[in-house]
Length: 125
Image 1 (spheres, helix red, strand yellow):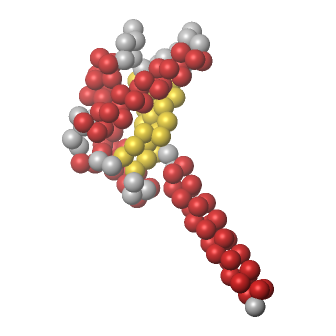
Image 2 (cartoon, one colour; image 1 turned 30 degrees about the vertical axis):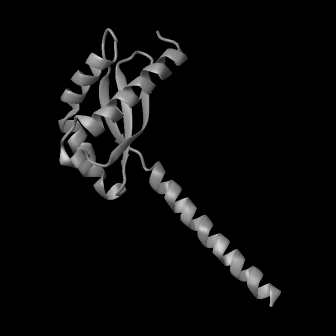
């Protein structure tokens, strides 16, 4: 079995190559303006879990995942040519809600800061 460092290198390479494919090679309109947030490869190199998100948010999740599933054969074949492995892992795609959660946290923190600024102004008067 490969070491954790090797697994991470493989995952990073898959992420890099797949991100480039999304920009330059895949022309499916369902897959425009999406980005890869993470890639995990299991210890047996049987599966690569790819986490994606879109600029528009969760409203496009079903559309994006359907587009990725329909293109998975092309994606896997192209990645297998670019990443030198004896057996290339099967691809599984997941929606990653992390960017949306981070935006929500930022909004909450900004509203707290605004309230604190108003309280500070009122107390100085």
